[in-house]
Length: 352
Image 1 (cartoon, rainbow, N blue to C red):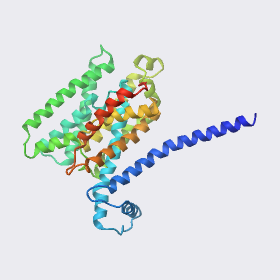
Image 2: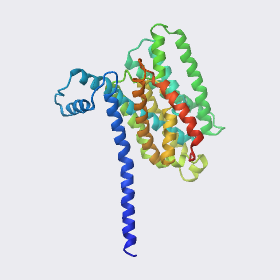
Image 3: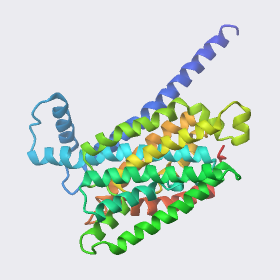
Image 4: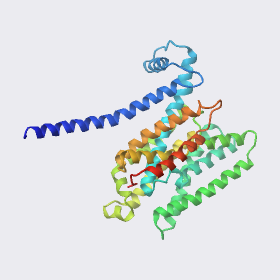
């Protein structure tokens, strides 16, 4: 009996390690498989073998030896979309999980503090002024950061109420003002050129994304994710509430703006390239919380993987289900709203 105990303990430890390895590897393999399917699928079908050949040739610096049209479709048309979907989907889901933990509410999304409205106003202004694409993206990025800055300034000015509630209410008010400004610019825009471009941008799309766009926003996204990873255990304490977190030694006045700034930076960078893509930051963290629980150390990586896969799947559907490409914002709302209602009705795991 004495020898059997350590043997059973060792077997149990190996089993736990194997289960942990499977949880880490299988989602990555599933994401890779989905990316390959996305690269091969479309109006111009490409065999998976040719996709492997083209990618391997580019990595090794060799000639692909396939039809030049196949190489163009894979490398110049679909690969930028796939990479952008992975990065933007992961970024929006990570921001959503941060906001939900910070505000202790699974109904919170990255839009709560006006970042999407600010980015939208910046982009709409750029389109209205007929600026180049890079300027439109920079205005969208700056607009998202400025909107959240304005919301936080209001929160600091109004100290009589609960700080979290104040930020939410300020976000609603600032978002309403920004929405009115967007509507005004749409009324004043050229209905034949500018208005269609504004409408399409507000619905979200990866059609115009390039690898250069992804490379431009990636540093901001990584910079925003770094504090979330390093301080993930403090987020668990922040989600307990203001008084409880302070009682456990967490300086909430310093950490709250850091978490908000990080999530805002990630969201603004993503939205500046793709336009407004709703629901990802709302439903993906909720699903991740059901799968792995509220521990932010597990919730964050799970949200990153699920968000990347979800947006990649939605983008694949957007360019294949209809003769014309469907804007991503329409599909995410059509899928996300009913699914979220189902989650609310069936989920049994509590938020915290």
